[in-house]
Image (cartoon, rainbow, N blue to C red; front, top):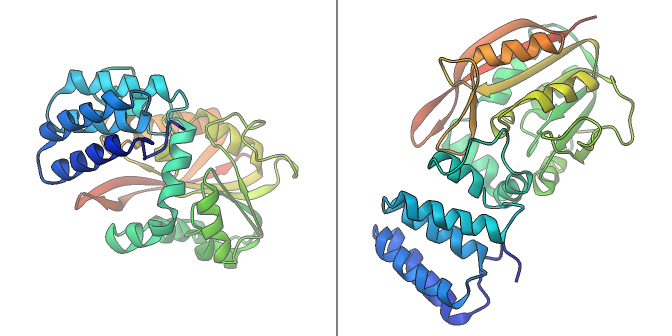
Length: 310
């Protein structure tokens, strides 16, 4: 049995888990947790089951018991495809990680790809692609090669295609890349992990460094805490004088980054400014705006337009 499997492989355990889910959905997380414990007595090596138990305990207000279950999840699934380390950090059971587990992000978006655009655009009023494209258009430049980091299903591509001779897209999720390919606006699409160093991220296998005169990252940096790796990638990708346009969720006051209950990271303007200076990127424009809704509430963000030193 693989740790990520939603089925335990045991009919009785699965039945109890199904009843537990119905109890939780009916507003009875404590009863759901008790039934889930019974299921796990039958299949103690089921990582997905431990994660479900942890969420039920958390919703029932049993923080310490939830921490114990999240730790059991992680012990059974060291790659952490469920993001148990993030949940532990939010509950005070572990330090906030610099970045989420890559397998968690990959699985999250592989599962989300089919409904991503309808959920984000139609239900959450997602506007980053249009706003970021407007910043790019304000330069008045036409770009020979643009690299769209974390391109997802390719929402930014159509917005900037007219200003670009060649458009490359990179994302961690193969399912998201498949959706981007359907738009037929990218000249190439490939998998890459922005949390890794430039040489390991998968961005330079078949192409020269410093090839892009435009680099974009729309609504992707919130899935990275420490942004050193992605700015190192930008530094390697961008040619002298290249423009770099990207968005972050706005943490507000402070000079670092913060893990939110949404399991996304928010970054301060001061933190981003510090990194930009360290990597030789001059700020051309900053726009503070609402980038989407979450739970019906507006999410504050910051859009940056920067330029690499000539």
